[in-house]
Image (cartoon, rainbow, N blue to C red; front, side, top):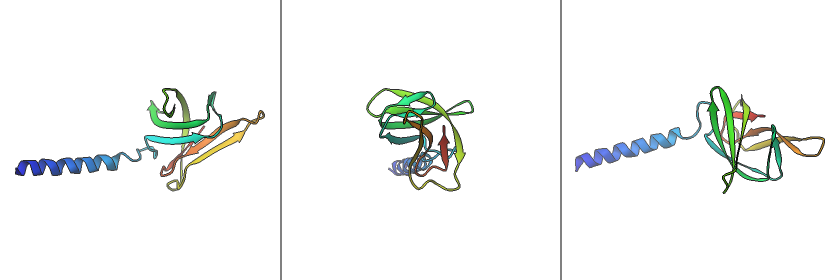
Length: 121
């Protein structure tokens, strides 16, 4: 009976530690974020359609890669970006874009609430 209590306490502590470490990683960004584009968005050579996206942050060697996956779809779009440190944790999500000559949105940077790094394209 005593062994079960010790094992139970150990499992609770292990779970709490895993939850605490699951937040941001050493790059200052969460592993998974969410973004919504209200209009099609040019990102590099890719045009992302309007809608909700799950964004996963990965590394390929020393290159930071963002994988945009459409919500409730298997469509994935991969693109590289540069990480730029922020002076403090972001207080809100930010999507910064410019309009090109054809009046289309071109993504410049993304900031996710709670991250200490912004993504520059």
